[in-house]
Every structure is written in C-alpha cells, then in structure tokens.
Image 1: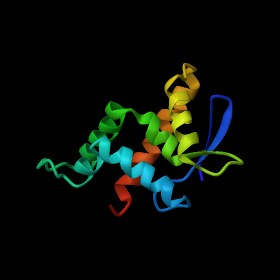
Image 2: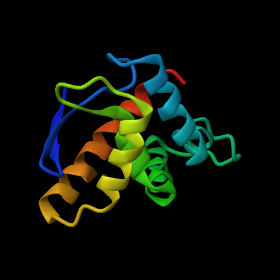
Image 3: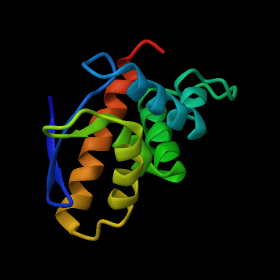
Length: 122
C-alpha cells in the first residue's frame, strides 16, 4: 500500500481491487465517471486506442476533470477511516497545495492510480 505525505499529513492509498469501503469506491466511481474515465477505458467514444494512448488519454481526462476529488477518493489519512466529508475537505486542500515536491508526489500517485485502473475489471 502506497503512503504519500500531503499538506503535512500522511495518507495511504486504497487502489481498485484493494482494501476500501463500498462508499469510498462509490465516490471514486462518481468522480471517474464525471471525468469520462470509463468512456476512455472502454473506447465508448468510438476511438480505438493503443494501450499507451489509452493510458495517456485517461490521465489527461482525470487531470482535466480535476484530479483532487479522485485523489481524495483513494487516499485515506493514516489513523482515520475514509468518509465522504473528509474526502471533500481533502480535495479542497489538495487543490490548494503549492509545494513543488508535494505536487510531484500527487502526479506520481495519480500515475500509479491510472496504471491500476487500466488493469482493473470495469
């Protein structure tokens, strides 16, 4: 399980197929759907993508839609149980991060998440 430090707090990731609450996965699916992720994952837009292009397009869709809620959907602060209220607050805090190292960490975490999405059964 990945651990990442953001905004001075440690978070652990719950990637698809791993541990996580049903409400947490519902939250992720809600924001992934709004981002158009399932359209890209399943070529529902009629575009035939190579695996590399699918990964690039998926990553771009998530960034365009606002990655912060998706990050907040799969990251849980250490010592806490994930819940929607905290996730929404974390999404706002993640969006306000200005530290260059933390921004890189968010990008790396999102890349790992996208890689996991590509291999998950949707």
